[in-house]
Image (cartoon, one colour):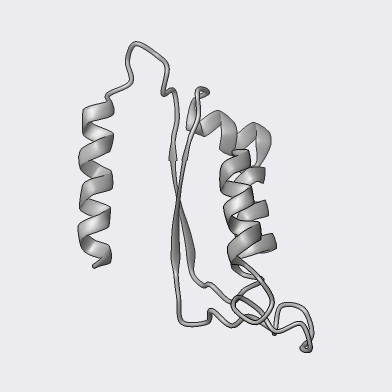
Length: 104
């Protein structure tokens, strides 16, 4: 996860806003009823990230941060081969736009 995103999450996911530290872990989230759609871009093919690495960065964010504060469900979109000559950025941009419209 990029350092800027991690710093943002550390500053916003504070006790009293995101979780209640007086309750047991994973039952203390104050953001229940919220959901998240995590978009991960990478240079490697997304299938390789899922198979060889088990989507570890997504799982860490999902379980260690988002579900901890009560956010469920958490859905991923993995965009791979971003730097390759065959990458179609326009198609992905349109897909992300459609996802954003559905989220409203």
